[in-house]
Length: 120
Image (tube, one colour):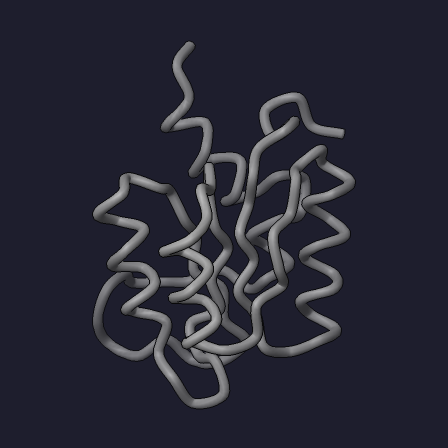
Protein backbone atom coordinates (compact mmCIF):
# COMPACT_ATOMS: atom_id res chain seq x y z
CA UNK A 1 0.00 0.00 0.00
CA UNK A 2 1.22 3.50 -0.88
CA UNK A 3 0.16 6.23 1.55
CA UNK A 4 0.13 8.89 -1.19
CA UNK A 5 -2.51 6.93 -3.12
CA UNK A 6 -4.57 5.60 -0.20
CA UNK A 7 -8.30 6.11 -0.82
CA UNK A 8 -7.93 7.98 -4.11
CA UNK A 9 -10.71 7.34 -6.63
CA UNK A 10 -8.97 6.47 -9.89
CA UNK A 11 -10.69 5.94 -13.22
CA UNK A 12 -8.96 3.34 -15.40
CA UNK A 13 -9.68 3.54 -19.13
CA UNK A 14 -8.02 0.65 -21.01
CA UNK A 15 -9.32 -1.66 -23.73
CA UNK A 16 -6.82 -4.52 -23.39
CA UNK A 17 -8.27 -6.84 -20.75
CA UNK A 18 -5.00 -8.18 -19.32
CA UNK A 19 -3.39 -4.74 -19.19
CA UNK A 20 -6.54 -3.27 -17.61
CA UNK A 21 -6.60 -6.01 -14.99
CA UNK A 22 -2.93 -5.46 -14.19
CA UNK A 23 -3.41 -1.69 -13.79
CA UNK A 24 -6.48 -2.25 -11.63
CA UNK A 25 -4.65 -4.74 -9.41
CA UNK A 26 -1.61 -2.48 -8.99
CA UNK A 27 -3.72 0.55 -8.10
CA UNK A 28 -5.88 -1.47 -5.71
CA UNK A 29 -2.75 -2.82 -4.02
CA UNK A 30 -1.53 0.79 -3.67
CA UNK A 31 -4.75 1.63 -1.79
CA UNK A 32 -6.76 3.27 -4.57
CA UNK A 33 -10.46 2.84 -5.15
CA UNK A 34 -10.58 1.88 -8.83
CA UNK A 35 -13.45 2.68 -11.14
CA UNK A 36 -13.43 0.60 -14.30
CA UNK A 37 -11.64 -0.56 -16.22
CA UNK A 38 -13.63 1.11 -18.97
CA UNK A 39 -12.81 -0.31 -22.44
CA UNK A 40 -14.57 2.07 -24.87
CA UNK A 41 -14.56 5.81 -25.55
CA UNK A 42 -18.34 6.30 -25.22
CA UNK A 43 -18.36 4.49 -21.87
CA UNK A 44 -15.36 6.53 -20.69
CA UNK A 45 -17.08 9.80 -21.59
CA UNK A 46 -20.19 8.66 -19.74
CA UNK A 47 -18.07 7.75 -16.70
CA UNK A 48 -16.31 11.13 -16.52
CA UNK A 49 -19.61 12.99 -16.89
CA UNK A 50 -21.32 10.92 -14.17
CA UNK A 51 -18.49 10.20 -11.72
CA UNK A 52 -16.13 12.07 -9.46
CA UNK A 53 -12.49 11.03 -9.63
CA UNK A 54 -9.24 12.11 -8.01
CA UNK A 55 -7.15 10.88 -10.95
CA UNK A 56 -7.32 8.77 -14.09
CA UNK A 57 -5.13 6.39 -16.07
CA UNK A 58 -6.01 6.72 -19.77
CA UNK A 59 -5.02 4.44 -22.63
CA UNK A 60 -4.24 6.63 -25.63
CA UNK A 61 -6.03 4.40 -28.14
CA UNK A 62 -9.31 2.64 -27.35
CA UNK A 63 -10.15 0.24 -30.19
CA UNK A 64 -9.03 2.85 -32.72
CA UNK A 65 -10.52 5.88 -30.94
CA UNK A 66 -8.24 8.55 -29.45
CA UNK A 67 -8.80 9.30 -25.74
CA UNK A 68 -8.59 13.09 -26.25
CA UNK A 69 -12.28 13.88 -25.50
CA UNK A 70 -11.99 12.18 -22.09
CA UNK A 71 -8.72 13.96 -21.34
CA UNK A 72 -10.33 17.28 -22.27
CA UNK A 73 -13.21 16.77 -19.80
CA UNK A 74 -10.79 15.74 -17.04
CA UNK A 75 -8.59 18.77 -17.77
CA UNK A 76 -11.54 21.15 -17.50
CA UNK A 77 -12.35 19.60 -14.11
CA UNK A 78 -8.70 19.81 -12.96
CA UNK A 79 -8.53 16.03 -12.53
CA UNK A 80 -4.94 14.82 -13.00
CA UNK A 81 -4.38 11.93 -15.38
CA UNK A 82 -1.63 9.97 -17.04
CA UNK A 83 -1.66 8.63 -20.56
CA UNK A 84 -0.49 5.09 -21.14
CA UNK A 85 0.18 3.36 -24.43
CA UNK A 86 1.67 0.20 -25.80
CA UNK A 87 1.89 1.86 -29.22
CA UNK A 88 3.96 4.68 -30.63
CA UNK A 89 2.90 8.16 -29.55
CA UNK A 90 1.59 10.36 -32.36
CA UNK A 91 2.37 14.06 -32.43
CA UNK A 92 0.14 16.05 -30.15
CA UNK A 93 -0.69 16.47 -26.49
CA UNK A 94 2.53 15.26 -24.78
CA UNK A 95 5.95 14.11 -25.87
CA UNK A 96 5.98 10.71 -24.22
CA UNK A 97 3.42 8.47 -22.61
CA UNK A 98 4.52 5.77 -20.20
CA UNK A 99 3.65 2.15 -20.71
CA UNK A 100 0.91 0.96 -18.36
CA UNK A 101 3.58 -0.66 -16.21
CA UNK A 102 5.54 2.58 -15.80
CA UNK A 103 2.37 4.51 -14.96
CA UNK A 104 1.43 2.44 -11.94
CA UNK A 105 4.54 0.53 -10.86
CA UNK A 106 5.35 1.67 -7.32
CA UNK A 107 2.87 4.49 -7.80
CA UNK A 108 4.95 5.86 -10.71
CA UNK A 109 3.30 8.55 -12.81
CA UNK A 110 -0.05 8.02 -11.09
CA UNK A 111 1.43 9.01 -7.73
CA UNK A 112 3.18 12.02 -9.26
CA UNK A 113 -0.05 13.22 -10.89
CA UNK A 114 -2.12 13.07 -7.72
CA UNK A 115 0.58 14.36 -5.36
CA UNK A 116 0.72 17.56 -7.39
CA UNK A 117 -2.99 18.09 -6.66
CA UNK A 118 -3.14 17.13 -2.97
CA UNK A 119 -2.78 19.82 -0.32
CA UNK A 120 0.24 19.36 1.94
